[in-house]
Structures are given as C-alpha cells and as structure tokens.
Length: 99
Image (cartoon, rainbow, N blue to C red; front, side, top):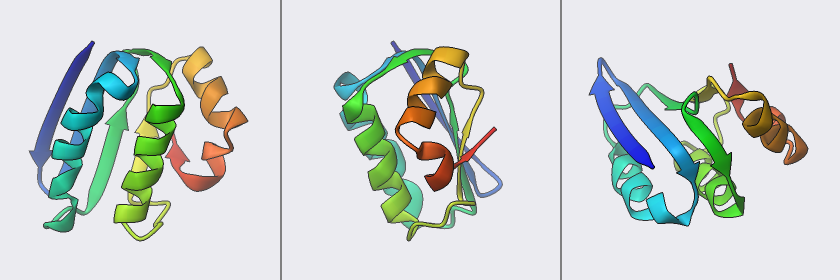
C-alpha cells in the first residue's frame, strides 16, 4: 500500500497504490482536511489501486460531502477495469467524474 499527496496550483492530488481500504483512513482524512482551504479541484489517482472496499467508497463519499456534493470538483482517474467496475456497480459514475 502506498499513499501520496501533492498540492499544486490549487489541485490536490491523492495517489493510492495497492489496497484502498480502512488501513489508509487516517492518511486519507489528513490529506482531505486541506479541502477547506484554497482547493479548486481534487484528483484521486487510482491507477495503482488494485482493490477497494466499502470503507474506501465511504471515504470518497465523505470527500464529496466536504466539497458540497460538487461532482466536478472531485475526479477519480486512472482506475483499472476491476476497480472501475466496483465504482460503476456502486453508481459512483453518477456521483463523481471518472476519467
């Protein structure tokens, strides 16, 4: 499991590698606590994520709530087919921008 964040020009980039589950809860919460500052966009890079569970889906929903439900502010990007399938089953394609 790897977890990296970078804030650049108002874009918060979060990259999660390996398992996206409750084990990254604290890191994810700490990273997204910056949301209330001058963040224009949040990109969650799932290109190195090979698994996500319901706690990961919950963390993403909390993140969406922090930005007042604005679908365009949070982008889930680079998800592999298996991860993208989970997101689609959970109807996250209707709640988030997935690229």
